[in-house]
Image (cartoon, rainbow, N blue to C red):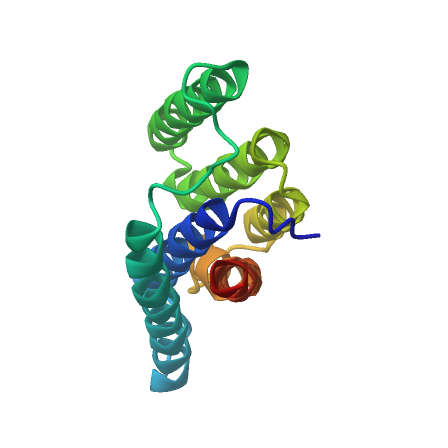
Length: 184
């Protein structure tokens, strides 16, 4: 599930997934259920994401000159740029559509779905199946968040409450495997 041939890629994935866990747990603070417990849970998820990123980023910087799966002059780089560009455009278009159609409650699930789906082709670009697993899991979370009946709890809460742990479940093994590969 994790290929340790490119540890720099792994620690960068850990950093990105850690920051994403922080961001999504923060967005979930938009409208959690009443009571302090849910805010504490979301804060713990956010701090965990920052901790992973805090370990991963310096490791990535220290080893930046090591090999990566992406060759900046090759088709993998072009595929990466195309996938990221499509992701950004899709997020903007879907957010505008949701806002204009009076369904701004769907912005978080739509963006989470796009983010998740974009990891699937990137799994092939980087040769890391864990990215595909993460992408599928996030897309499922987005669908669940979108179809949960409306209530006082926002859809962004469900995206963050369930999405942040998905990011962390991918980030931690990437960090551990990447760090071990650097040590070897």
